[in-house]
Length: 265
Image 1 (cartoon, rainbow, N blue to C red):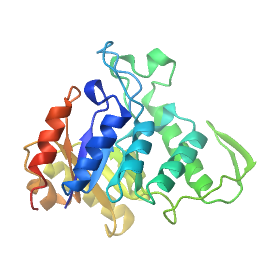
Image 2: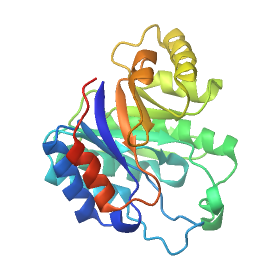
Image 3: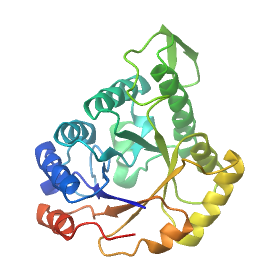
């Protein structure tokens, strides 16, 4: 099992330079990855500073040389697929092939989507997520893309350069239950970002294994608060343990976890 930090880029952490420094320290301490929440606003906390996760990941890529980095997760419906494709490749280049794209539906907590005029219907967001992923993967191929879908259109355009990673940047998909939609989506790609119990994870992975025909190379990134025991999740099939910090987290709290280092698994 590999170990990572899962940081909320808010408050004291709402500064790309601060996040890059913490990531560099985590890498030196033996952590295997650094992942960021991806939000634009926190409506329930109107005075809370928020950092753009993608700019911060670029800063982290430039300050580190080994750790895997990524979003966990990007609500794809609020982003244009062509922009995500471009930015993901740029971070993949900066990191020399260490970027992972975590995706999901997101949520309208406090009006985070609806108060910005974004789609807040879950079914429509799921359609946009599936179609957006198809478009992004085709853009990463380097071949001309022709696409006329319900939500997106591309007319004979090529998107170069291709990602450093081949055949493409890994995609990890969020899921909170054994509902077929998210698990079908996860089975198409490279990993799962579950929010569940160890028993729930076993059920999820059994369904994904059935759909994929196996779990070889499939990553499972579970998050839990500092001090939690990852062993039950490792036994259930998790391949990553992400130390997940709360929405309001100080630099000192992250530094303390880094100083404690990675527990053997």
